[in-house]
Length: 87
Ligand SMILES: [Zn+2]
Image (cartoon, rainbow, N blue to C red; front, top):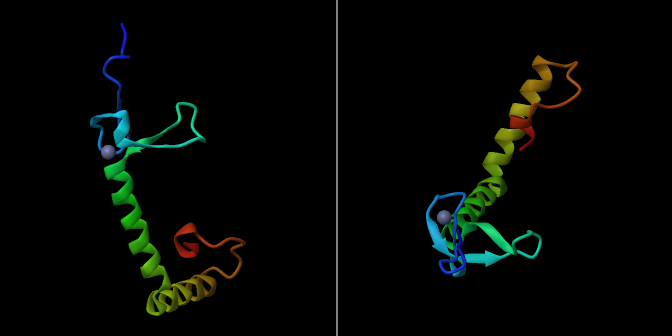
């Protein structure tokens, strides 16, 4: 069985089989390509950007600080903050 003639790979995000040209190069990977297609990569990026904007939002920041303060009040002996609070 040879797959050389139809060089496609499955995107780990949308699970579509796409041409290799639909994937960005990634030198850090053994096969030299990203595991998600360009489309999904773009989507993920805008998603992250949105998340960053929210994180920078002063109101969100204040809310987070308040949640941490509440947690500290409720669990004064906790050595670590729950992950949900440190994000
Ligand atoms: Zn995809």
